[in-house]
Figure 1: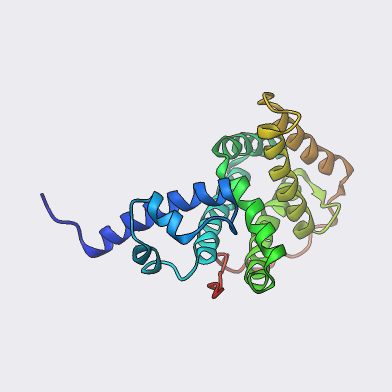
Figure 2: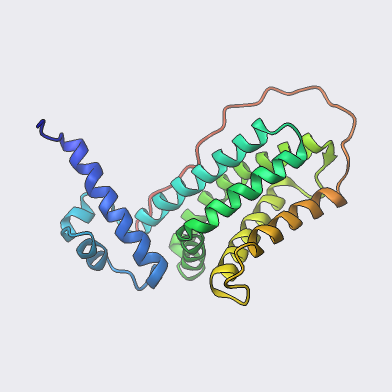
Length: 226
């Protein structure tokens, strides 16, 4: 059997650390989760953690960046492949339901936001990260309204931020709140929110000359040094 390369071993180590950290952050919160606890749960040493990450915040940002990039890319694909606005909505519903079943992403989102509120130094990294992601999701919303022949009722960036917050809250309520045990609740309410936006939107303005679209930049992160 061929021996693994150093890079392959490193990826296995990172995968184990990331899985352990996801459970720790979601279950304990960022402040309570410790580097030692994350490392031990992964069956690794403290040194293995610091060989791959500078801080636990550094790891959290990487986890969330990849999760959010994956979500935004999948939603973009739904819009691109849908024949009309109704097909987009049904595609969004299916994506939302799959994301909700995963569970960890929503909890990590909440922990990321709370940690930024409580840690001013980390907040600067969080702000740059979330602003870039909102711009990415805003393009998805703009494409939805364009496919529906409507003008967005608010700036796409604002709609994107509201949708992400609302969707996360719905998922948490469905899993732990008054609607626990109602698997259709979160998806139905999210779809109702999107239909409401389309209903209040006015018709699209006169077609403007098409502008060249620049290459979509990947959400950028600055490494936390806390």
